[in-house]
Picture (cartoon, rainbow, N blue to C red):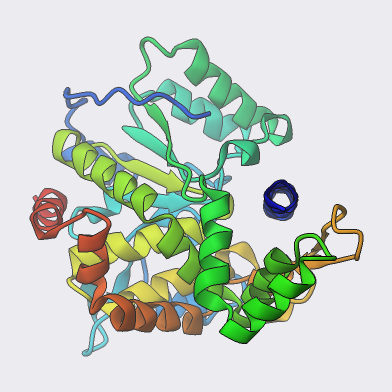
Length: 364
């Protein structure tokens, strides 16, 4: 029974990869690159406007808020946006925090953007990839992306941009076990357990149906519960980098909206002190930049589970976009389950002392 369930889970995980489409060593560098305090604002200045303004427009592209010199990185922007204040002016929460950026995978770089990153080899202090190893498909990279990653690997001994892999969904079995234990009702578990006697993978299929029904909030609850240690590792690494290097950091997963969105949520909380409106609007912006708004939903792929023999499917189109309600529900669930965002961060090992250091480092 165990081997059958694990086989089904590997197929479901692979389907995730197919729809959304290493472990790099990390050697912390204590040296700080050239003074980026001035050059950062000059060569990597963001044209930031209200996130709400962007979300209300149908033709927003990453160029509107990302550096004009890097236009082929999807969903590319700083972690913390500037939001309109009560008086209509710009309420700037970011301080120097816009040197921590987020994006989708760097698989579509143009030759021009790749050459820009190569020429300025200190552009990013680190690139943190939150994907699992089997999601990193080198054969699908553009010519520019291939050029960029080949250069990093060829110059591994001298590069100043570090590649770091922290797979949030590394423990796929724990993800599905938590989904079964926490998100199925006792009756659903009992029924699926009984079905598993003659139908392999019934529990996992029931869990998949539950995630589909709940959409983003169900997915995020399982991610936060199963990937807490990995989120904690990522936060610790970001803290180390911002304390020792003034250069920007780039965080990404496949699309830069789910795993990256949850990590960005935690980072924004740390720097804005629980400014939920900023977190929600920044999360919502992803579906606009990716073209996954309500009008485009329903056009996604259904990932067929070929090993079940019953035509079972996990409908990944149910998780398209990044609607504001999904982040609102996630924040409410965190408050209900852990008392507050601080309670969750304490649980994964990113306690107040670290949060204070992060705020100070980002505002200096």
